[in-house]
Length: 453
Image (cartoon, rainbow, N blue to C red):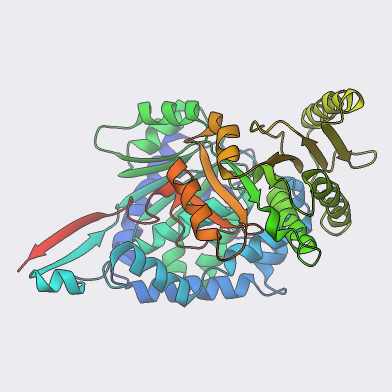
């Protein structure tokens, strides 16, 4: 499959990206938005996105096939991991999910199209409309691709011309997604630009940020602070910093009948995108005192990770990362040889997966790439004490608890500061309407206009 040269990312590797080239691209995007996007209805845009998603879910789709062909080498994930991640993302792009998202964010699916009223607004003689930024810049992270694809979808919904600056080496999936939109509706595709370069190039970034009405960025705190300093006064900045996640399993779900299901769901979260997303668990807290002890849980988890490795192998890791994993393993192997409170299970002759179980409840940051900690906890309060060092930095808690107890336990984590609680097994599969870091999915992008009648 030969892709035409529609985007800057399509240029040959030796081509130079210059400030002049960026300025010309920004001008073209703004012109195309005014001509082809600003006047589209939400219904029309959603229809195109659903058509694109349905195509990506088909095995014979050329863009999907190309992604699975190029992805393992360029992104470092196995084909099976990429396939599962793409299925999870594109299965969310449905008419029903878009309607739920728009009603959640704006109270009415037509709010981006015209002045409309909810029941309460109508009673008060009020209506309202929302408008997105004319020119939206995304500074994308390079760890996993789905958040960048989501940003593109949201930008189209808000009728924004979009310039997506990908991390170096992470262009392939956003580029293919943009091409698939262009193939479905070339006028919409003409309102997108995709390119990648190594971050910290102030000359290029100044040229880009000078055109932006709104900038979204994902990265570590230092990167986000540096970006914010480069923005002009009045530019809206939506930043998403580093977050961690963990799981919690209550003792009463670990019955003889249910334990295998809980283990399988836990493995789903550990292997998804090789544990590299902010939604991936670093630690699984297991309530002690039940029929299955935390150590037994960890042992069964290791067995399931070994089985999963055969079907969905972990991607290749750089030598230095493999060395970090090996070094971390060695530390726990020494501890395990001197203490009955530490246990280690690991893949043979590789760093493909590691399970460490230790009695200390203190939250431990994993070195990722399917390296997971299992820790005992008496109850939720014990977990919150152990995780106190990352309070305010927790994105998602994956929960395995009886249905009648889950709301109460979820409320405890919410009051502590977690912004998302979901069933274990779905941590890396947030819904389209997910409020990222507890913030509105679309609301931060738009400006409201109230009309008082």
